[in-house]
Length: 633
Image (cartoon, rainbow, N blue to C red):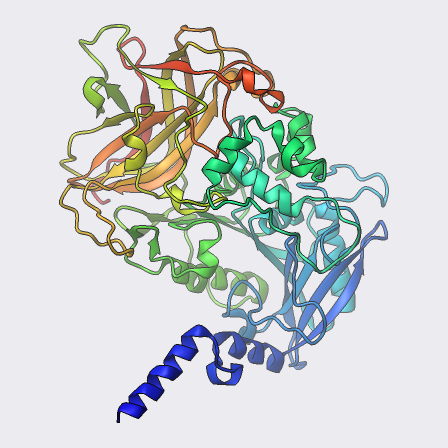
């Protein structure tokens, strides 16, 4: 008996170590490949574009030739992988639901990446008027690809859909512009729209150092020619990103110490610090008119990379295309989490339902079935959003909801926050702190070299205890406060310097006796400070993103900026907190707190500064919430 028990224990041990042969531990991956091989033929093609450049493309066509199928197209700069006829994907389409349903699946390396020919340009600008076959962009490449597929792939029904997440979502958006007539449905998911205003590389003029460094170092280096080999990740030689970037010093040192002019796009960014034509040409929102086919827009409340993008794309589609069937879906997800996670947990927060699974089965799959196969009714609202805090899906016929009322939460003395404006305080009442670029507020408690995702929902107690972070919070709520729509910060401040960054965070503070229900053992949820929203603004752009202006030392200045959209319920017994700080490192680069070209700044330009945030009747700093006042919350 003991020998049998030991044998079984040994088998389990070897299984978890992955030391058993594949046949003994065949799992979902192998099963997925078997399904794909059984149902589909795979072919590889070099698809010609109008300028003669050929793009590497894989096509999976159903073995069933008795029916016709729609085409699902996916274009990416991150490699379609599985190169060679003998290698097969284990999942076709957005998830495992699609293979057995039957589609023609097409995967393509975009121009200049991996096995495709041509030159890759990060966020290649759209060419509105194409005067010759040499005028190409992602829109024309998508059009030409669809055209080739319709002519060369048999047994299609003439309907094409496309989808993508992150950069492939941007490829999807570009394919929507001047779209091929056969394109019947698109789903851009977490697509950037403007890399200077609010997506991956900048937020309101502030440079997103940690992410931009990591992404460009791997994805935007010069290449010698087509290759199926991915770029090497940068070696930081330390697990501590905060320390790495602190030792880096000014960002002008990046080329001197690490890149050595091997990343051309980095050099371009350093030459275009302001919102000039270089950045404006990349802004996709200006081209989103005449979009006639249905669009499923997807975003995650806790997306650390692209939340501004999908929301602004949705808003623009609604404004410019009144008749378009554009749907907005937002869930409690990190970047792309809806595609690969159950969605019932993120970090230390539970959402009580598998939101990712719900989206895949009840939203995304029915969307493509309806518009590409004319199959099934599509019962989706204008906006389907998950309300965090209350942990429930909410349906609205308009976003933001028309039933919301704007309410201001004002800063008060003794770290108080209230819907009542300041009264009885000095006209010059303020709170102050010393901001030191040499000791910036960290973005997270995690020890890592890349920004990660959990900091977007992380417990903020580590920041609230620093002397360079101002904290304001309400009394314990006597009833639920539900917000739905954009959140704004309105600050009145002064500084001893001539520039400053401002970071404002909206936080849900749990009761002190909240149960320890975090999925991670040992995490105490009593007085947990859940980050709901946070955004940065670089002061020198307060009047114009195109023309920066220095601050006047010690002069009171007002700014207003968006913390982006949210749908959250602050529950009875909780508190609402706002934190204000001027560093968020190294997600955001260090501001010298001196009016200079930050991309060319040197060590001597960086200085300490004393910041004052005013909270008087004359200068009432506050945040603006869109509150749902009806009783049925």
